[in-house]
Length: 165
Picture 1 (spheres, rainbow, N blue to C red):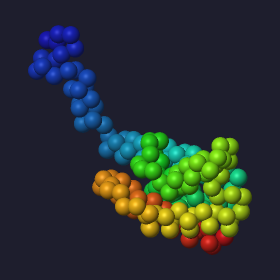
Picture 2 (picture 1 turned 90 degrees about the horizontal axis):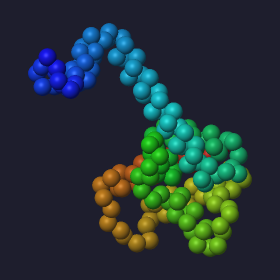
Picture 3 (picture 1 turned 135 degrees about the vertical axis):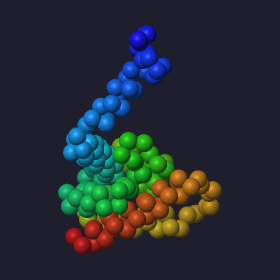
Picture 4 (picture 1 turned 90 degrees about the vertical axis):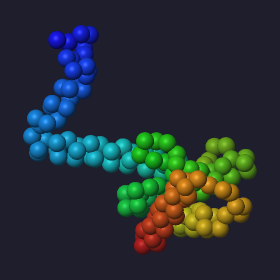
């Protein structure tokens, strides 16, 4: 006998039903659903990578954008430190470059990459140098340190792809 959605053993019916459905699901169905979830997560991450690119290179050539997207997919991170869920993992060097432009009075143009492959290469080299040679030591959490390592991997992969263009 159940009272107010509680089964005879004192468990909510929804939990019981969910477990029962999991046990009765065909093995192929579970694998298919996992694949669908992974594809959805990859699409969401790609959307965030594209948004991150638009923050630093709205006027960059398509080949620069393609190199950015390839590097982001390869490394599973982007140069802005934006995760698949849209949250920032840390303040990236590209974000620092954007903020420096703002401090210099540029309120309209936050384009870091410019409109050529060469200008994108220069901006990426500058960001990588600044990442590897911080001006001031700042203690960081393990998560931020890991995110900065990923950021460095991204910049190196992105730079490699740009230099091949």
